View (cartoon, rainbow, N blue to C red):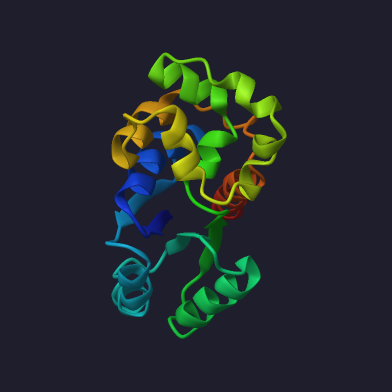
Length: 183
């Protein structure tokens, strides 16, 4: 069995390529496919799901919530995927991928050599998934950070069990459960 991750952007691919080996057993393969944004992902899903030539492939769609209603967005994505006949797990990063970094400020601090751990005590940042624009907030403290470089630098330091982002934990648990179902 192989898990195929359909992603809206390259920064998510860079992150997942580095953390998935820590989450998944060695006997389960994976492939990450990035798209050029939400629209590209949503338009390509039906075609790619139907045309995929590995019958035992299981798909995981990862999409940023941004300003959408999380449950409505998930229903829309389920509707897009439903006609494919494929098993698809949908996970939403609330609000953006960078919220997952806010959930592990120790990893961000380690990656950039700047102590930002103290920020997790501030009320505004205690719940990473409730930060409206987590990417912009990180840029305030790390103006040099770019999305792709950030993913590459932060991922190796992430503590997958201690991350305080609920959407990150739901993602990790969903992947682990899929792996358990097939092994």
